[in-house]
Amino acid sequence: MILTTLLIRPYCQIITPLSIIFFFPNTEKKGRGKVVGGGKKRNNFATSRRKKRIFAWSVTTGTEKAVIIHKVIMFATLKIELVNDHIIIVDNGQHILMDTGSPLSFHPSGRLSFGENKFEVLPDIPGVSTQYLSDKVGYEIDGILGMDVINLQPVTISLKDGLLLWDDDAVYPSCFQRYPLSALAGGYLAITVSVNHRRANLIVDTGAFISYIHPDFVSGLTSEGVMDDFSPFVGDFQTETFLCEVDTLGHGTYSQVFGVPPQMISMSLEALNVDGVIGLDLFKRYRLQIKEGNVGVSC
Image (tube, rainbow, N blue to C red; front, side):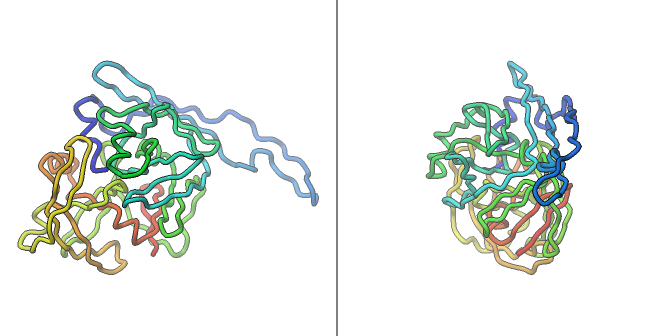
């Protein structure tokens, strides 16, 4: 979904990276270990090896202050599907839209649950409802997984394998090439690529089935036609599209369609000092692992 910041901005006094209020390291003590079958010593704690860390984030609205507490997922493998050009997490009978273009997660229950991992999240985002999302995506959506949760630890996203992997011990496989990411206000991540032989800094947005670029990058090109898109804040709109040559992180060039964003979205992109948004096309082509300010890219 294109830049939910546009939706949140009128309601929030804080849209920069959400402030960490406190951090409680796990005080649970490690067991001394027990001898199990085969005579091997197993540490009770090491079976999960996943420290439980608690973060609290402050979101100040015009009328009240909400504190959202997250338990960090230390290890989880989730099934993802591509439904009508949107990445959907399918877990425990729920369908969660994965949206790196949204700074916040939400679920009507106020909680996102993935297996044994539970997150206290916003019960709603002004102007966005599960019914609205379901109507726009054309599929039943139960909530949004946004950057406030995604940013908590390393994540590997592979549409090719249908998997999303959270793992605090994740390592880059030898087939992954690492490239730096830029951290932006709102928790967004931006990646630098070449578009039409010009350096472009683009927000990585899994919720955008159309990528967007500043008009200067497509000046003089012939339009490929008009496409329909939507944003909760802007509403439904049409965008002129252009076929561009993209060089993504040294993996070779390919052709990709970019739209020119409407004025309201352009203003938000300029405020973030980026040239556009790279959406689902990136995830269709590559497996990506986001870790410690870098992105690992593999075909």
